[in-house]
Length: 115
Image 1 (cartoon, helix red, strand yellow):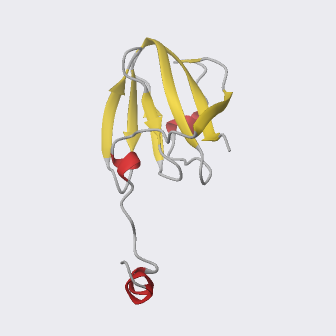
Image 2 (cartoon, one colour):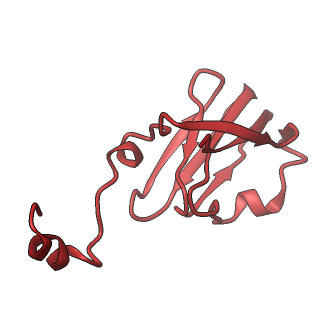
């Protein structure tokens, strides 16, 4: 991939994103908006269905009380419990949803490039 021909041969190929694989926010990103707090009775139905963030927008799900199940869809296809000590990182344009199984309080913080 060090030559023009090598790069041209890879146009249209999917690239691995190491930060995405590690659920690691980019260094030059900063929070710019957050939701109000949601509980098991006030969580918007849209968050319980598969949805995505906009291109270039990351998010962090902060649980302040209880536990929440976070489901990340293809190409990652994994689920993880979120708690006060284990927030969830939402990757740009990757389908995801949450599931509530008991008392919980959480909010979502949205991140974008600070430049």
